[in-house]
Image (cartoon, rainbow, N blue to C red; front, side, top):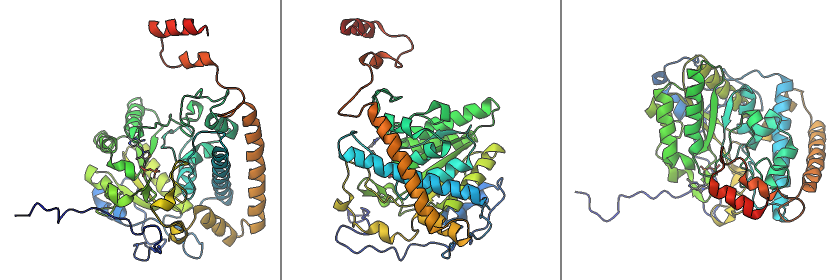
Length: 410
Ligand SMILES: Cc1ncc(C[n+]2csc(CCOP(=O)(O)OP(=O)(O)O)c2C)c(N)n1
């Protein structure tokens, strides 16, 4: 009989704590090009290995190798690179503006830009996106006006959420981008439901959704997975494993027991584990899953193995729970640097063009920000009309609200 003294309990602990020297030498990372690419309609039972390996295309010499090389045109890769750069520069600017009190809150996606940008490019614009709060690159890649994104974050008079949402909880109906929810995980079930409806109506569009690895410990993840598998829903279920869920590391959500991609196996769907900092691998895996969904093969789960370089949000201080320099030794590098090096390697980019791109994007971000500020910020200038708080909530306004509105005289 096992004694009840807690001796066999496992309380996962992260590799390093502040003050310790970080290293990831024992991470099992297969070489780029090592994994074959299966037919998109392959039976999930023949795909278990994909959940425990890692799809990688860009090798140590910045060459694209192996069957997963999507053979993107140089123009498309340059577009991907500049969209990732735009996302990063936008993020930095917005975080700085939060620091000086222009908005209440912000969340950056530094280090994870390839996830959103490559996946947006691999999908059709009519496909419906159900993101978490760390895929602003989807908006940038789909061409949303940065001014509108800023207006929302500033909760100003032109905020399309009318100041009612936490900044970064974007919504963009015209771009098929579902409203982000502050309640973690809800998007998984919503995406599956939407995908089932799309298939039922005989439509082409598929859904794609993103969840953090920490949130896979929430029940919504499992409900979404069950219904996606049972109904053969045309959906891509992405788990962004950026190693950290605020101060709690991926082991707390079960990442040391089994890979997150292997969760797919238990539900009977393919689980692809992908180097999330390898733009080409992310693009290729997403194309594969999208084609499978469009051809009636149902749902695919993708684990994007990456690293959250910045703090969780502007309310977080990662120096309290992990070494400050952990991201610098992350073995999969930086997604922007890796795609940039690849483009330089094939003579389609240069340091000079890169520098120029940074300057041009920075100028655009600055100009857009100045305009956004003129429509108001958290602490100054115009705000949404008071009357707007009564709009867009109920189709028919209940009597009590009508009375309150009359009382306010708005
Ligand atoms: C249902 C619910 N539980 C808890 C929270 C508080 N919370 C916000 S973000 C977060 C961490 C999520 O981590 P992860 O899913 O790994 O995503 P990441 O932030 O790393 O992208 C937590 C616990 C919440 N917003 N909703």
